[in-house]
Figure (cartoon, rainbow, N blue to C red):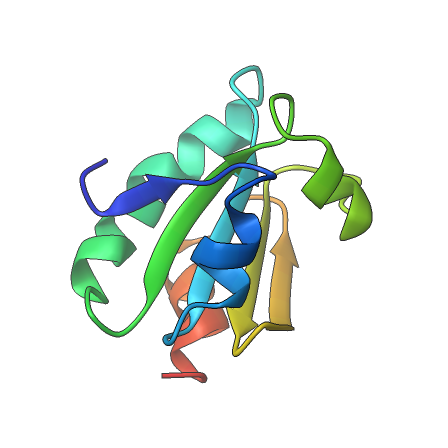
Length: 107
């Protein structure tokens, strides 16, 4: 996933909240089937929206602090952050078009 950056609890502030462009965050885990199902779609969108949207993934098992503070209870959860604020979210696996619509309003 060349265009998708893996973020951690320690890099979330810098990579997501301080990003100059909108950020789509995919909260996932290796054991989650729906997470694995949408991974290729998230990668595809990262290529399509390159330069307009930053796409990152956070493994909730390895990084429990950030998902906990954001109230994430189910995965996959996709959240959009703009200028440090959460603007949109989707819980569960969605279609490419649904995921794209989540973020394109903020470009």
